[in-house]
Image (cartoon, rainbow, N blue to C red; front, side, top):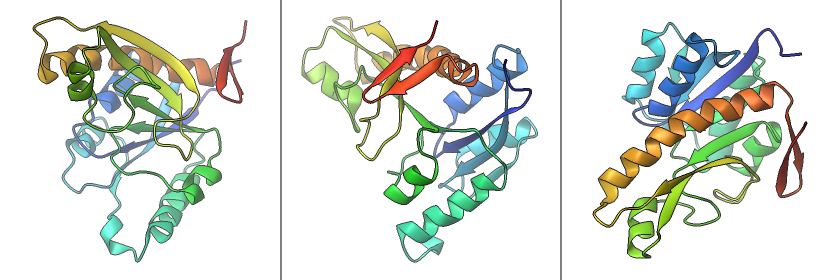
Amino acid sequence: MVPNKFKLAVLVSGRGSNLQAIIDSIEKNALQAEISLVVSNVKDAYALERAHKHGLEGIFLDPKSYPDRNSYEQSLVEQIRSKSVDLICLAGYMRVLGKHFIEAFSDRIINIHPSLLPAFPGLNVQKRALEHGAHFSGCTVHYVNEEVDGGAIISQAVVRIFDDDDETSLSERILEQEHLIYPEAIQLILEGKLTLAGRRVLHNK
């Protein structure tokens, strides 16, 4: 049985196009969840404007106003816990989360990355894929652990790399797939259709 109000917190740093994809899926009733909180570590992130346009609570939490990462993450933990959140979705959040935060929400943090992990973790993903002469790229939804882009894989979408692709064209086609598979992955989680078994995510029948 799907919970009536499966609550999400979305962490952002930039444009928030994946946040928008989640919002759109909720509004179309393709995703039976609600966004309880949007948190940005960047003051003027457009993602916060997207949140406010849809009547969502969006806050800027400034890392520079805290003495260290643990203090910042403790504040982040408290903000999220105050909303009784079921799942935390990273959507272009450009900070590496520390052990304290990850342990506070063990197996309840997911991320989307613009490559077919474990290939090309980290930054400059499309540039590296093109330089390596890869024929395919794509995107990956995965659980978050302490290894950057190293958590168990939930779902992936494959994108063909064409001979005339550059970083921009490849990024745009990958982003289209991100907007499809991220809300779908959240829906699978809230329906209880996934089991995390070490490095593997099993899809329950």
